[in-house]
Image (tube, rainbow, N blue to C red):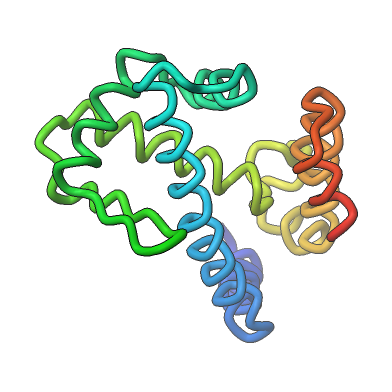
Length: 168
């Protein structure tokens, strides 16, 4: 790009650090990841034991985890995971089943990205250029939120979604 475009790109990258938005977003994603992995592991353990509710089965299926994969993940968690009170740590770095690790991590990333809105492909195409990013940097969140929260929330119709919308 031109000198002006490179300058705009550098300013846009540094804005997240100067405004503390980037560290804040990273900390909140880590917090949600801990809560998310606990919820996932509890549902996976129930599904592997044949005691999962229809809502838990639907939640795990949306993340690509069926009863077969749930059994494999539950086995890995039993061997390597840690239950620390109400928090369950997957400790996937010790797992020996690579496909189980990939499935678990993919669902966790999907869950975190669904809960903590990070604008990506949900923005209009004109916001993909450097000048478009600069002009639309404060609008990209609201556009992504409409796609990821409101529309998805209307489809789910559950208490967790209602609670999240109220907290916003």
